[in-house]
Image (tube, rainbow, N blue to C red; front, side, top):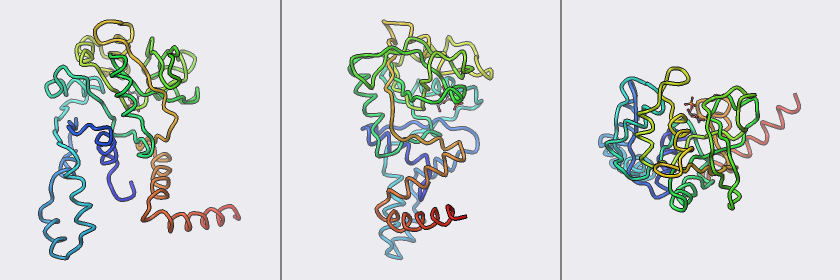
Length: 267
Ligand code: G1P
């Protein structure tokens, strides 16, 4: 995305919410991810020799970002199963889950707000975004009731990827969660659901029905900019937006974009 991998934005988001210990759950063929966040001594040496300080700083940026740990999921048995792989690392503390495909614009504050809400209410907190009825089948959908805070709702039920007519609302789970460690036991009890996978949504559904251990579940309603980098259209929109906002590239890129759009409109 512009000049760094999408996953780096996700790690930077965690770091900007004061989370500096990152466990990445990866799968087969994902070794380049690990290399990206590791030191690259050969490249650093070449850049030092050339005196290219700005590139050197960029290369070091990714390896100095956070303490990185990796675990391989082995069989991809669903998001719930991926989260369960983190249990030995996490222990019994609340923890955040950030899905690598979902990119939250760095100018919008979501994760830090979710951590505040978790500290205030306990239990677990999920990020929700209103989507159109035609899109709800792509997401986990939440039944909600309002709370005293306009951006916070109480989640009373969840359904993974419902048909529009069966959806409890148009509030979709987007890929950010702050979870109570009770979720691990809840995941273990989940029977494979949609696509025969262990769904995180099903474990959270169980927690949303509880007031004691692991519950309640609250939602933070996000109205900022979110990009699904797994969707080609969204991926392109994200690159354009992020490039426009860059201090170094933005001014020239905006000028070009303006003339490009004017040309396109004349055709
Ligand atoms: C996953 C979750 C879903 C959530 C979505 C957000 O689905 O299972 O509940 O709404 O992420 O991106 P996936 O997109 O991995 O199919």
